[in-house]
Image 1 (cartoon, each protein chain N blue to C red):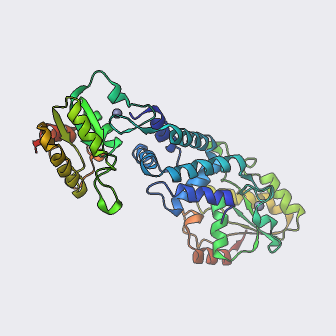
Image 2 (image 1 turned 60 degrees about the vertical axis):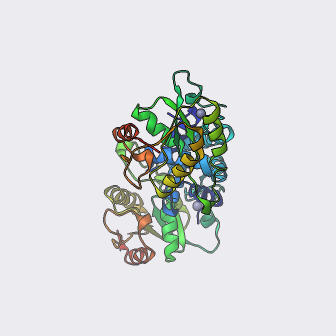
Image 3 (image 1 turned 45 degrees about the horizontal axis):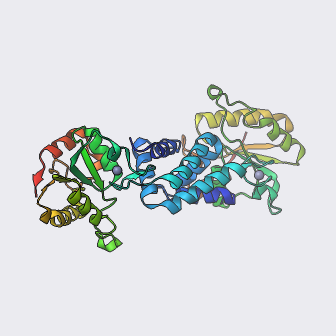
Length: 197
Length: 197
Ligand SMILES: [Zn+2]
Ligand SMILES: [Zn+2]
């Protein structure tokens, strides 16, 4: 349609979530017509992030450091661990200001159909950390979706023989809702009303 | 919030039209969590397009060649010129299949408040091409917005003393509508019902 390099840019933009053919075209032309500076910055940011961002060696969240800033912090209560599905969930809980422990980020949930099992979520590592790092309480804050609940149940079973407190974040979070879109107050209530599993 | 490189990626994605803070965050995490290949392709496509895409030396549309494929084609009727605002408009008219002449792409419309005057739209060059290239008919297909109409009027005045046919695309295009979102049939009707100015 357009020249090959413009078509390729349009096609590449389609990898962004929620971007269909029409918006990809709009974005490509917008960048080339009047946002060279922003496009240049974006190309550089993508390259740097791809080259350098990996996983935190402790909690598995995304970070360009060997260990993320939360895991490195000396101000956190390392005896309590909150398990979440994604890095965005960490940010959501941090913004609620109601949790000062450490995190474990599954980077997903159990989904056999997509080939995502306990290994992909690092559950061995999770058990290991809980067992050998004086963790006394684990709060499971996976999404309150079917998959999130199943993952929560699986983790609770996994940790059962370690004889520590394992709780599930309360259902202040609307059923079927995704954690990262919930406001801080609701999250605070949900954390406070957690139920022992 | 996240680590610096992730925050920078989120911020950079905001240069895309229609992308607010929440979707930028969603996009960045999605790319880093599960779409490295797409992100890599996008970074490369942005870089190549920025380095190589410029303006067609004849019609001013975006292209990585000195002259775009339409201007280079020997199959076009070079005596008729259609004037549009953007490269997307060229594609829209081409898809209607009802026009086989050449184009002139203004890359915008007159907008004194944004400092966009006749020079920015290449109107000198336009007049020059029309005057010295045996153009016998000019169809003005700027958007049917206030600015598009004003631009059309200005161009018609500019070309008046050349004594050629200057017409305006018919208002089959809905008032206030943007050309690139109009379906091919409507565009075909609009071209067919053009009025002499
Ligand atoms: Zn960490
Ligand atoms: Zn051209």
